[in-house]
Image 1 (cartoon, rainbow, N blue to C red):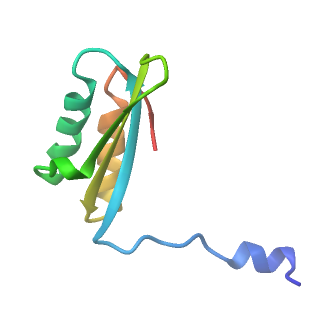
Image 2 (cartoon, rainbow, N blue to C red; image 1 turned 60 degrees about the vertical axis):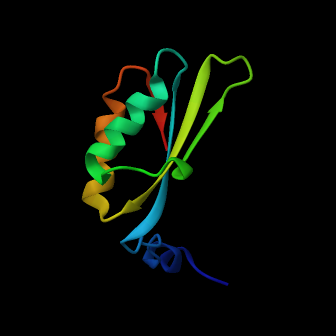
Length: 95
């Protein structure tokens, strides 16, 4: 049995870079949303192979999710990608 102090000492697992890292972007399904968000990610990663991009529409096609798997090089890169994606007006959530 562990005590509360033992649980506080345990850190969340750290990501070991480089690694494959999926980023899921959810937004309003209008215009060329998927192209726009992939372009934002590619500013930080270089060209992404089409096989590493998955697109799924919501049941009523009001929203779209784009999952892009990147070769992440570090936490700073991920923070910059998330920040730039959140600045896109049609983006509602980045996971």
